[in-house]
Image (cartoon, rainbow, N blue to C red; front, side, top):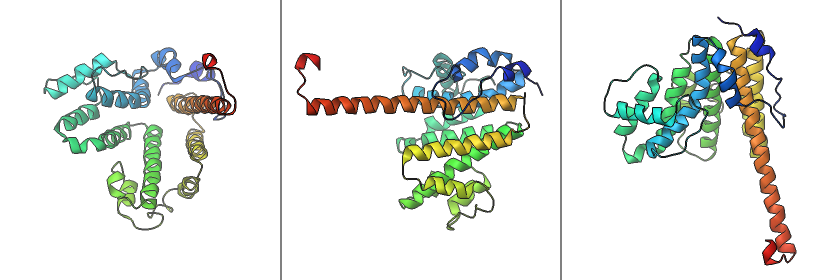
Length: 278
């Protein structure tokens, strides 16, 4: 396994409360990614493939769609791959196998099945990632898969929806969520984070709940890489945490913009503003 003393030593210390960043996920891809070994690049790709998943869905629906720039593949590469798979042409192994499985299923689906597209792609992606061969990375994807499914199952129960049809993945825990009628789905003794997750799910304020969920993820990442100092696992954790911080900074900006618009609207209602200044 490769060690990355220089790269890790140069990484900034991140906190979920950070309000500004000098690094971004895109910066990492352009500056650090080229220095990873071939095997470690494959692990980093599992992070960036999330964006390719979203881009693939966009391009399947509209080949002229604007895609996220921080994936592994360009729009042209994805479109060419879609065409090759659709026409049963020979495709190389530069694309992960789950993408070709999904593309074939997509073109075989009826219009009624389109609502399940994202779930199906997520299931294939998580299954692929959990077979990465790296213990930590596999456990991370399993943890995140179960966490998301528990939240979906609790919400489905609350609104009396069919739980089974909404669960993604084929792990034992996923099956328990589909079939168990127990309050805890029979998982509280299996998952040490189950009870904290239940409390988080009961938080009424959506923004506060999301922050607590990210804190749970953040803590899990730190605990499970405590002894990984200069390894690819530490770089993978940095990427995941960087993504979380970026998301919260963006949310804060959005909240600020919404508040500003609300203040302007209030002023307009309270004061007669001349038309030329509106």
